[in-house]
Length: 400
Image (cartoon, rainbow, N blue to C red; front, side, top):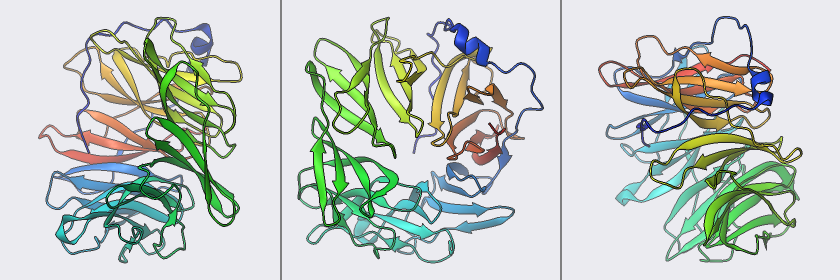
């Protein structure tokens, strides 16, 4: 995990569209403020939050890395590793389990889950396929299904069902080196769809009740390769396609067998899918292909084929979108200020509320966003103290 966020000095102020100007919220109540969760005096951050206030976090830059769980109002638990003294990095949290990767005996890493209902208990180790040695994380859904890779001489995409006792189901062909990009929440014949990247080929696997069937997504004729980033419960997909004689383009598939549409920048810049939600909203990162690498986030909605820029708050040189709520169109973002001596700050944006500033956590300077809950009611990140330690925070966000 990397706590650094480079300050970029070369960025021009975006010319906001009238549509976005109308979205800026006029008068607001007192801004939400980040509050401390987790330990102090260490380097800690928030990895995931849920609408009911649960927080999954980690304290890093220590030996070993310690994953932890917070349940409001005051329950704090250090999550147990599979082997005493081993490090665990948290990934994701749903309504049933938390997911992480832990080092086991002999330094072999593997994916584990911890129960939300009994977080103080031992983790469940998600097992590799027979003859393989370890596993790696790809994605998890709201209900607690987890997908990733079983690794031996090469990699195979697998899924671990919620109540499957850690046993894997093979998703891709054995040792085809397909990697999991995402899974959705909606069960098809009992198991979710799985998005895969297999070399230069984006694919989606669907369960037929007995086994997974893998289908290749259509790609533009002039693209040299495409990667799928995310899928949703409406059987739509988003990703990025790359070209020999031009910049990359954010890509949308309206169904798993559809010809995709792409987003080209009028400036000739590269566009790349970052996030995709259940409302088919795609957060796109637009990057200047010349030196300087200016990044400007855009919001691409295919129905109207509009992709306005995210508004930049006053005093910000750059806005970085860190997460998108899945059930509503709401982002949480980090502001890199124009004044290099000013602290980094956190904002949210939604069409209904416009920009909302999140006040930094008391006793900290830089504050950086990392995650947002499914319905956009809670955010998480970390603040950096004057002494240089990082403290995890959560923040209650205004409702839509």
